[in-house]
Length: 78
Image (cartoon, rainbow, N blue to C red; front, side):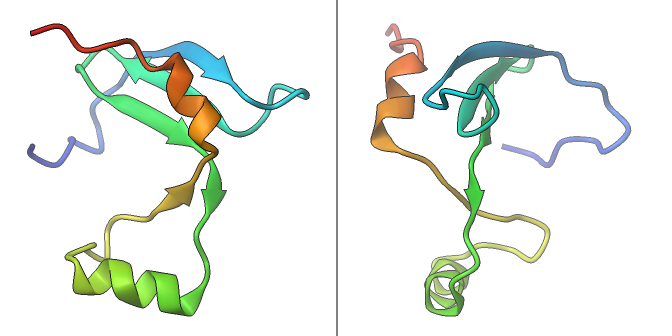
């Protein structure tokens, strides 16, 4: 997957949330065939180091979500 163009607009479609207040965590689908996940930013230095070792580049971040949020992701069709 190539990097999205920062100038390019993306249309978000709400899929669901596990938040009772409706703020976070939340799953969105996009008009580009991707997902946007709103979650809790991973800030633990050891976790970040492990992610970097696995290839997380500086221009990306990681968020933590509850497993229950994945129930809102549509099932893939072959």
